[in-house]
Image (cartoon, rainbow, N blue to C red; front, side, top):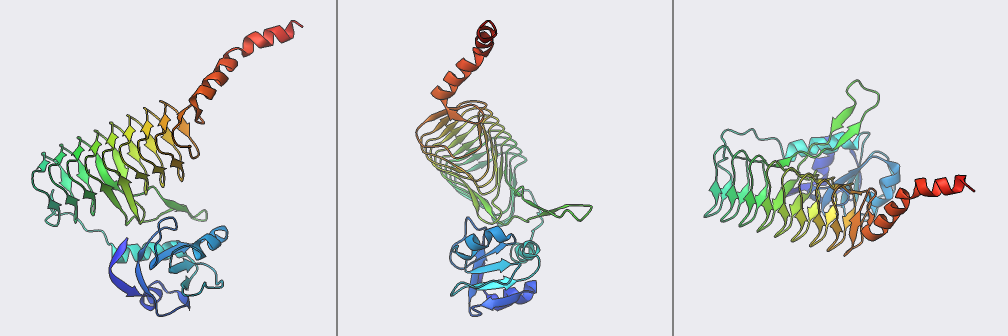
Length: 314
């Protein structure tokens, strides 16, 4: 998320009650997660094993729970609970705006776009030209939709990220990391009925040009799907996944978080993807492996009773 105008790091420090270490002249451009940061961004870290990655990232300002050596030109905001400080900043710079009508006055809808009955379009949404939005679609605030997009009934764009911090010493143990990202749907995308596409925690969830989604698909926060992909029904994709161009995921494929599926890959139905897949290959199984090798393996598994009988007869 980018701020409407740069904000002084001294103002940020005072607002969250942090000790400022490093360059006090900096201006913050926005908030972002570590995997999405660009120069000028604020990020946060509260686990020591991630300190180095955060300090060496593109983030200019890091909210951190321990005083450490500050990289040259950057600023650290030191306080006990970076997670809660980050949430406080989100609530200040992108506060929730209650809806007052089904289609917000601040939404911009392009020429030739058809909005069917019972569609909800939130604040600051942008929809391009010649789109078709079917009944009971919900489009949360700040979503961006390109030209020639079709969205079928009951789909939800922009629900919050499924992202929580565990507080084991309390009765209610999970704190919500409030989402301030967006959903971006590029030109010529079709999204089936009953799909759910979550916004990024602070960055964007993106569906690339020409990609087609079947019904009942879930796409997690911050995932980026590139151009001309096909995704069949009941696929579930976790957060922060990158799916490159021309990938096909057949029905009921499950994809773990924080991985990449390479260009031109095909994953056959009911496969589970726990880690990144190389480009241009066909995969099957759980965990997904190259399909030809997996089929040979299953052929040998079927022969185990026969082989065991032969061993017992020796």
